[in-house]
Image (cartoon, rainbow, N blue to C red; front, side, top):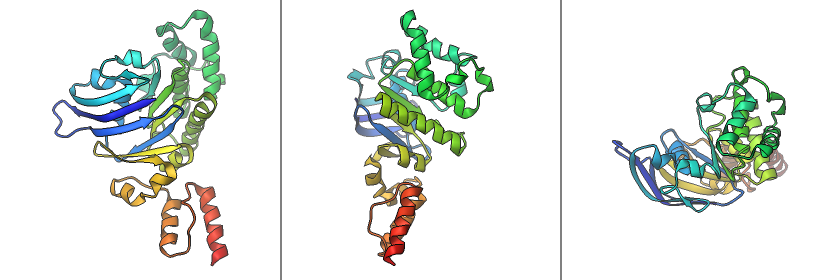
Length: 281
């Protein structure tokens, strides 16, 4: 479990807080999508969850952040990393090895995993990420989507209870983006891993995440089940966050008195809505 209690942080020399009074509980097994416009504080929140804030960035830190009971202000990032793994935006900068297998081995060896467990963990992590065939490939030869999966596999091999990802599909095409989220869904549903993912592609979040949190200027302005949060679509738009087109269409149909069902989250639900509207016209 992750607990944030009135969490705030202002980088040294900055005029305003990057995080401002955030209170949030992330339960075990959650799949939380985090969204907001540029500068909303999403990446800083990821840094805080991993312990990088406040240990590696200077500034004013207040409130409390507990990761599996560990106070992030008192425990070093290396300690938190034993239960929480992070995949940041710069994947190439995060890689430390030249071959996929070695990338996964690096973390296992540094965390002191017993030698007799290592082979099983490597194979299991590669399989969970769906990249067993890439084990001996050079990382430089991989696509962006494949590198993302290698980063996820390297974290998964450490068997963290929580994985935090900061815009993992930022530079990926739609097909690769979807594959990354399918991997995250499997880790969440099959292995019980808690997922916290920053993402700008709202349709992916609406399809895969169980809950949605919206940030604006360092504050948490909305949080709840995805469909519940989308009920406040106007507030999201005011914060610079796009909403799914099918949701926009549903709102317009409601205003015209043509539709009274629940808000659709994807194209399949949108098609169902249109069939219902067609039957009622």
